[in-house]
Length: 498
Ligand code: NAD
Image 1 (cartoon, rainbow, N blue to C red):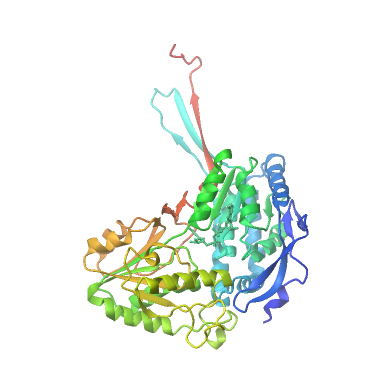
Image 2 (cartoon, protein in one colour; image 1 turned 90 degrees about the vertical axis):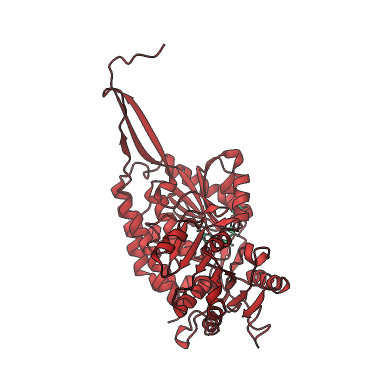
């Protein structure tokens, strides 16, 4: 299979108001495969003016177009069409995402694409289940309240680079199922799948302006979405610092905001577990997608009775990874690159800070042994032991394949360590005691907790809320909706209390 057969030679255009358009400036940016450091395509770089065009198109489509008058059934059918068309092109999309993000091809094809398809199916089905409720009110049958759920209007959806197709599909499908129109802004490091998915929306027959994609920098194009009075809601998935900027920039227009931000999630491992199972899950928890997963279990908190033994087993698991091009899976490649040179340097900087802070380096490090200078954007699976809460690598999100291991002796101490950062995205607990599993899961301050495995199952059905500085708003279709309560008096001449 030749993944490049799916790549265009000419710059990829943005999709605004049902048309493919170059940026006004005609400026382009490179699209790079980080696994081999190769520019394999280019795309037009949007400016503030281009963002305004997309916002106006989405506004017009929401206020005047046929979209608002469509039935829930019609919207659902359109989303099912997107699912079906995407399913027919899954190999192509898996190639595009693998090239653009340096991911492993099988994990894109068999996991991320399937999650994207499921996102469209789930939202399409739920587009017909956005019921409100009737509220019982005292008053001798003279009062009646009902609640309906309404779309927010124009939504700006700002995406990160670590799973643009999967996350984009989950969010965009929910936004559209709710009846909104959308302007999608993918990350400049991973824009391609969103630019190409516009073809799918076009073919499915979405009215112009309902779905728009603009590319460009967050500081310009993203900021234009956040500040525009014509945008009713901004949803952003990305780093906590970007979330802070968005909260500040949106202050003047007080719009609805949903933020899914960073994490530094604890994974507590008790001494009653099968050590080989626990070691594999612990390592999987911080190395999936080379650690570029928001909910990664990057702080492994281990009972003192199994501490050294578990570390040795985790080290063995880490040393079995084979880095390489994500298409070389048949040659045993099972470990992907980081998204860019800049990000690889950031991750290496964190590893250096762990070494400076005297955490014990168990395996890995800044470079693959013997490959210094030639390992490009690959950083080895790295384990630090004896990590303490005062260290930077305990507190800050690294977003690379780095596990920070800390010892505990009592359950109380484990919970305390788990909750000792500013984040509250996810957490895990590994134990054979049912009572302890539930007790500890109930004490981890995070929006999702995994027991005896790691990572979410049933993502669309299970809201993953970010607690503390990990986010604002609950996931799901209602996140993109407003409630309206109608208070009705049933009396012919209701008496005003005057
Ligand atoms: P990022 O914060 O650098 O960028 C996210 C998006 O915001 C990009 O599209 C970027 O262009 C845009 N942006 C940047 N500055 C902006 C501004 N001032 N105004 C508007 N938009 C702006 O994040 P990233 O590096 O792309 O992704 C990695 C981060 O995302 C990690 O912190 C990770 O934990 C987080 N993440 C969170 C979740 C979650 O569900 N909580 C999921 C995936 C990723």
